[in-house]
Image 1 (tube, rainbow, N blue to C red):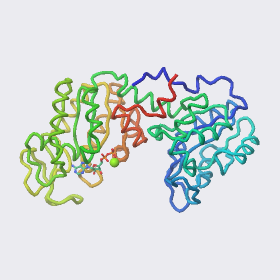
Image 2 (cartoon, protein in one colour):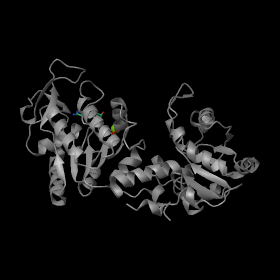
Image 3 (tube, rainbow, N blue to C red):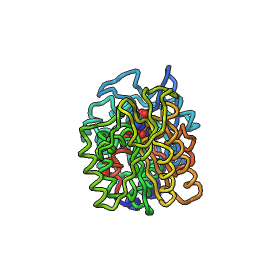
Length: 402
Ligand code: ADP
Ligand code: MG
């Protein structure tokens, strides 16, 4: 991964007074009954918007919302999030029901230095997802520069995430910059030793992540349902557990590759099992991985494993975490995830560990553990975070290189 120094940020902007600055943001917020139920994504991009506005730019927000598939849809208009954006910014934003063309040009012309406009959902036009250069050109015609503050959309080469960067001087916004900095500290240029915790349901959804990480980290800690597939590959009988038996050869290959690369793979040696998947089931017990009965399921890793993993983290300087260690939505199968998350949080607070985590369920699990504030960085980027864990170059990020 390219070092952070090679990205243009808002620090590289010259005088932007009166210039029209497109800012690609993530406003894909959850809604219920016409109300935005979680403003986290709006808060994340507010600093960039306010900084540009404060510097006297005309700020033009560009974002997608839902999946309208190239057509206008009244239920997916960005006008629905206008009130929430106004509230978070503490400013009146002008809604512009187009992204390009004469109506957009006229509206943008009315804006003065420091004013903020919000353009309509980019995905109302098929040129957005097709990354049509003509569509990008029609947008770019009304602006002077482009800022990308939406890491979460950077894995897609769309007109508003990639196309515009070929047409206008382009910069990373503050939220994008923070994300790139955190990811660089975790896997680009990390302090060693580095540990990765990879959990979650299935090996099949994270094959490329695992393959990439074995060459990057010193300790690969495998938990969750995917540990079952690895255990099965070393001839452990996992009973009725979630397990991809067709991927045991692949699991073996990953362990061989880890061996070659000097990466230690950690599999649990004790586990929490039950006969039925329900909250606090009567059949719950803790046992060695070699004692799982035919009618039992592994639903969490065990306390001895958690203790050993905490000791591993104590020897590490960097941690990257994706995927819960157990079926954390159902108590008590959140126990291992919560315990190891607390250890990581405490080590981070002490200053001995840089901890970066991401993934939809991982973020939920770490919030549930009450440690989200104490991790160095938690990425809410979902798909983009996973692609970055796979070692891929994200088109929206690559385009911001100097
Ligand atoms: P993320 O969204 O953070 O990338 P995943 O989607 O890969 O994470 O995995 C999360 C899911 O894995 C959770 O719903 C959790 O219940 C499930 N899971 C974890 N461990 C197990 C297990 N032992 N058996 C079944 N499901 C599990
Ligand atoms: Mg998930």
